[in-house]
Length: 216
Image (tube, rainbow, N blue to C red; front, top):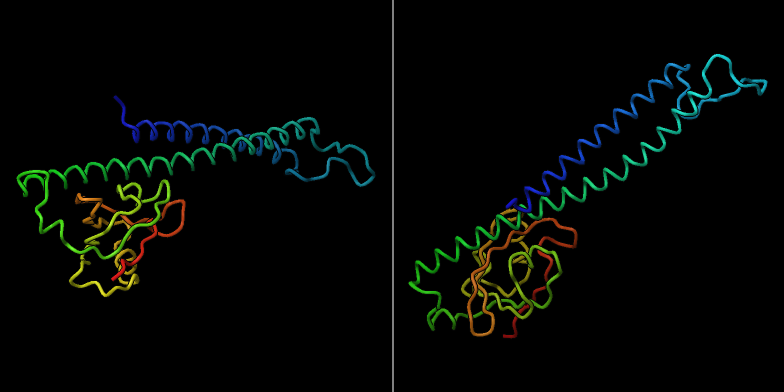
């Protein structure tokens, strides 16, 4: 079975091939205009007396111009499709890598703990912030964060060194852009180990979530 990133990559390559063919046709029609006195797309087709020019093939020029206009419109549409698929490819590749990394982290945690549960002292660890909003398609959603999650550890930040200042977390996010940040999260009575990668996406910020301080 072909993976999603591989299928999208093949689609991008197909679109790029179509783009190259369009650009070649545009160039060919441009050569026709050059051969006709380099009249271009806006050069006059009549002389100073208002009569059709005799030094160029007017029919050929008009046909070439019309072809170029149509081809350029098709090229513009194609470039948008290529851009959309490139964004899709990047997202799919990132998600595939994240899912693999999360699986590896989970497996390692289970090996370390001997089972999938956490002891009472872990569950009693104080949280530092709470998630109140997750934007669809955001890095936060990709990482598996949910509304009402209480974050116990955000990378190197935990209750022992957190100064109750969200700028402290913001500094970690900016410093770790496009890098892996490991989180320990309390969700109800369960602890979750998540992998977050702050990055530029289609929405605001590098995370796509809102976090607030917990009441002291």
